[in-house]
Image (cartoon, rainbow, N blue to C red; front, top):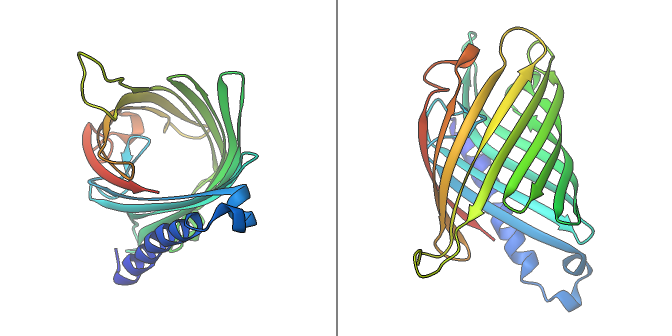
Length: 245
């Protein structure tokens, strides 16, 4: 990653945390925005950035951050950024990813749903940008979702990603006395309309909340190989630490 990209990503991370902290510190009774919107931000340091089982950082570390605003009615907007490493044959390396997303979340009885759109942006290489439309569902410890994109570069391929998973917060008691521990995982399948690039990815994780702000996680990811076999898509262990407000 070039120096200017580190500076840009660093500015995003610092501003996301400071903006959310500043807004949330305002007295609700004196501010219409704070009364009607929730602001959140997080910063993550990870040993690898694995997206659907494939490393986006050439198996190197990642610095990531997010800023999100959510209305009391369930509408939300946000942005997320990370360093990446995508070299091409021409010697141009894409080293920055900035995503923009928006949607609506609510629930029907015990089923929570999240419907939205996510744009993947690579400022140094605009021709690989793409957009996904997604629907995620959550029922107790179970999660499932589907995402669709019709403009996957460079061939403008159509892709549909399905996943199902579990996220379980272990309750403390006589046997398990450690609080703030969550375990989970998912199985996903990314299906493409062109070529033979479709594949399945797997993930399992355990996380521990160290405080109301800081948490750590260890995760394992893998894929079934296919056209994505290789060192960027093999069995991988990732460690990360996140600060969220």
